[in-house]
Image (tube, rainbow, N blue to C red):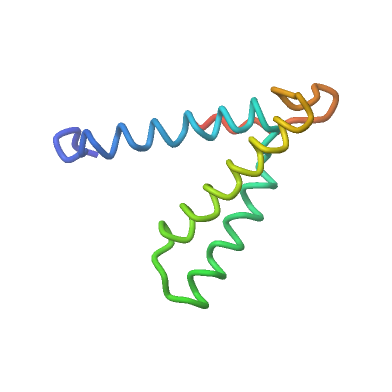
Length: 92
């Protein structure tokens, strides 16, 4: 792809999103399976309601972040347990 055609703002947004996914993996134990399930639900919501996928995704992400913060605060945990398997979300 021609570098001149890449929107710098879009590039920053993609990097920010990737960084957020990595933080959610590291802090909350987010897995590829979690992302697959979420994507499936979002696509069903979009098909059933006709809302833009980005709108449905933002709503789900807001709820997820709030619930995650509440759960960590109520248990005093700041990170998931290190005992279970983790799926690498790094994209190359």
